[in-house]
Image (cartoon, rainbow, N blue to C red; front, side):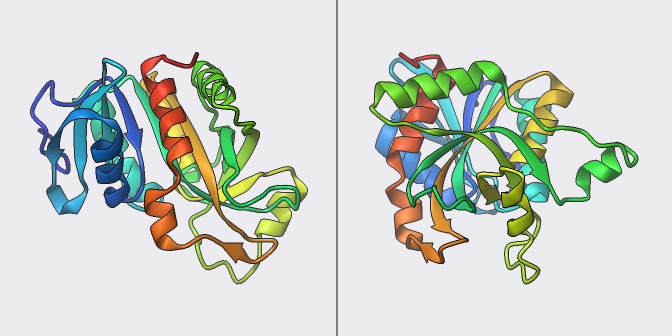
Length: 236
């Protein structure tokens, strides 16, 4: 048992999905997992373990932003020996060619956060996904007739960005702005684990369009199934 996760040893699977919204964690568990068991309710951050296609998998809410995700992922890696962690979340698109509900597989994650500046003493680290998980997610998406976008995203600490810094990110090929992937990838590198972020476009920053909160919580199911297949090695 760790500070923020009340699970007993062995209660969490080696593969874990990481939605930011704890209600999305509960939705994934109830809709997709066989025999889900809730192992965590501390601070309302639900965690469940069940099975997908006969293989054990967990889903754990992380909250919004890199500091919140960092707490949960640190504890999952340090105390529960999680091997594969896949963020399932939303992103704001910044490329004109991208559409609402497109799925993005994030190969890398730039960031405006000071976390890695502090961690690396001013050096610049390049947070990168696990190639094996990128490939598994891509194959799982293609098997469903989905053509995912694969490329870089940016993890921002600022949700309401009056400076419109997304425009600069867009000039350098960033596909979407989200808030957690850079820290997830950095921690995976630190602990020698596999990590990936699979994101659904929930709003288009450049075009001013968006989905509703209810749609974000309960209807981005293709992303969830792709992540589950990748997590348990059932890409094909």
